[in-house]
Image (cartoon, rainbow, N blue to C red; front, side, top):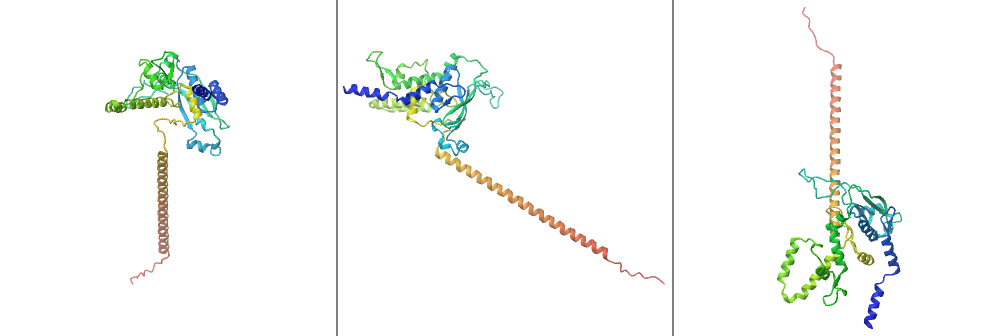
Length: 353
């Protein structure tokens, strides 16, 4: 009876509340269309994911501006505290993976054919609504200058990786003792280990340094610590599976698990910040160091400016000094000329008798 009561309690607790159910329903029904509004970044991410599957396209983030950025605080300083922080972005622009033009490699005349840059003009632009509570789709262009093949889109390595992450997130494994119909939750590592086909789901790439460390640690450990090794490997696999789910970045699509998104939405976990280019995630120490560097650069510029001002003043003083000397010389010359003109000839001439 106690077990039955516990089971009923677990089922009751697992049932979503009416408010959560309404939020999930609106999230599932929201589509990518002009003037569409999204109350959180999770809703936008799920809508982008469904749009990619329906249209058989691959989208990446071309440009974005975070709410936590200093530029955003300068734009809306008086109403920044009223902004819905679950939106994460002040503005964000998605575009087709084939956007941009092919560029030549530096120092060669060969184009980088590995990048599929076809100058595709497709884009989806979002911005903050006037009430500061939603992201609004205000500009949309769905025209592509290239063909769209659903089979090619599904067979890309990125889609295969997300299929593997979906299996890891499900965490379902079949017992060997029971029938095939009996399914128990044993974590994502056991299911992937028993049911993964290497031909369909290739293993994720890892650096040679990490592989060497893991191989060395596995050889150095004794056989008596098998239980501890299995637990540690399970925790590592679980961490890898958790790391597979991340918000949409510049080269990856959205996560494929709706349950994971809802759980993250309820827990209000912090999202990793997507930065453009070769930037890294900023830390307080890095921000403080950059601020100090900026202040030093500003002080250097002020010193150089003052130095230039002093040099200009010195040149002005030299010019005035030269002008005064010229005036004195002119006065002396004028005085000499006047003196020579006023003199009388006092020479005595003697006449011979």
